[in-house]
Length: 430
Image (cartoon, rainbow, N blue to C red; front, side, top):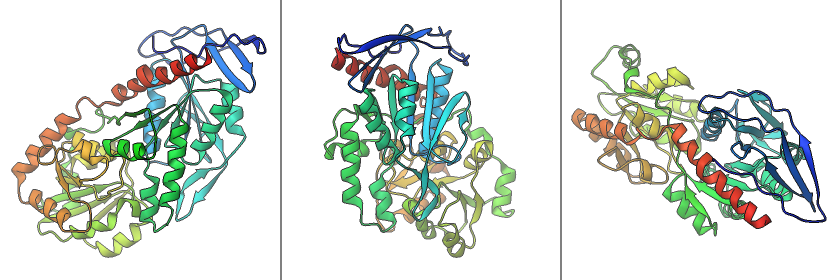
């Protein structure tokens, strides 16, 4: 069994009642699923415990700081989590900042009020809203999954604690590093707030060793590594396009195509691309959009800018690069490194944060020392001059991600982490 709901305690002051439920038909792709006909609900002093007749079916409420139409690492992880929950016969619900679609596949998406993030208008911040607790009370989840909690996630955590629902927090964004790159003197306050959220969650998952040390220093306990999957059916060396390369190099096929993929924003330190834009025999391709686009356009006149790409267009662009460069040093994971590796493209990344777990320097990619020295340019230059090294690193990088499909990664949630926090809540309620 994948996990059991939390058992209702035998408290005389509580009122226990059977609640009929007609469940909607859901997609079944891997195993048959029995439809639960009722739940037993025990409500006692503002705490809610649930017990189902079908212990294999989990209801998971995901409270996320970001979801479609925003496209970023948090959205991507939540999307794949919802996909896998549906595929394995479970019932997810998403609570996210508005505006946006109210349904993703067959999962309901509840939107809350939001405001635009200062200096980053395309990133809405969810506001405290009573709809969060009301939605959780109505949905009666087995577990509340807090995706990169900072604002709306804090509201979801409080609501879950009020209702007695176990919580799993997934640390994904280095908000302190984000603030630092925007010149905001808020890092100590942010660290205090982030630490408080994760100390109050039942379990916290971190994407990298660096993140684990960071949260441990904040006093967070019950920390576990949980990486990210990569869409191996999408990112593939076979998608390499000589036609696209000809377009990028303006008909000079001997040029080495260097690519950056990601948000064009200060926290990604994309202005460092200027350090490699003038390397002889190369063409810089910048894939993505964001507030730094205008600056980059002025300072990188020879670069090719594609704008934001998705799906097959993004996978084709990745596979058509000769080497991939990531500049940001505040990455808790760095998903684009995995996507480059899956595309058979050698990687150059900073020796900081998430890339330390993804790149074995000299074997699956190259790492450069963080800071403003010449390390980035030197590492890129060494790969530009050595096609044999590029082939060696790309082959090893590709091999390193072969077992990191999203289904494998999300199954760790379904089979290990969700049941663990549910079991702990059940023991506490006994």
